[in-house]
Length: 371
Image: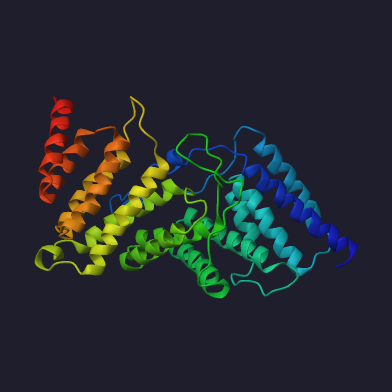
């Protein structure tokens, strides 16, 4: 690589580094952004299942628009130089990201639509960096297709990205989260705005479900949840995963339907349902703290109702099964500060379990709270 090539590569890398550094400083609220993600609406709705687009920084405070304008001009200047094919690819993807975070989606689409949809062969770019660029451009192409209403094309883009991520790179490929990306139960998050592999995995499933391919959608959503179970830190995307897991359980529940009454669910199905609720409890604990006086954690209340219903659905009547449900209920009592709604389920489960003393105490607390 000659001096001019070195300057071009350096300019592109520095521009991307400036962008990523700024993005990790942005405070935003995932609970507010994804509060209704995964909500199932009417089948004839324009969006049968809500899947919010990732955050952008257009119009945000802190000089985001100014930074994006400066980076766009710098990259446009570099584009006038003689570039190698790899430099052109790198430039187009980074420029598309600048447009994407500035909510200039038409220009973003134009920047990536001429790029190959196959993972580039190894060259001077490191395999890890080439993968990151590829995942970014495929997700941006998918979102551009979503915005235009072409969910089939969007699913194709996300699926290609996921297959490259899992098969060509590694069947055990993990989601890598920047060290500066943090989240927790307090507002004012500095969580990574977009993680491209995570976005591809999630949106692939959402497109299948939106298109009515429930079988594929459930499998893909389960794949997303399974991969994210191993993410570090474990709080990354906790609320979005909570919403995704809630949708997954809803879809499994619908698929079981009335079949459970005619024939007991298999041990595998039963374990999957109970494991999903244990996961939901962990995500609730990662997302919510002990409630303030005026605060109600509705997600916790919804989980308690669903857990009690699903234990009936999968016929979880053994003592071992009841213990697993009691774990969820006791943790939920804390997360809701003795919600009468939770205590009702607790009393019922304790009676079924045979612990009448604890059931009596829980019932006494319920009577005092319910008046």
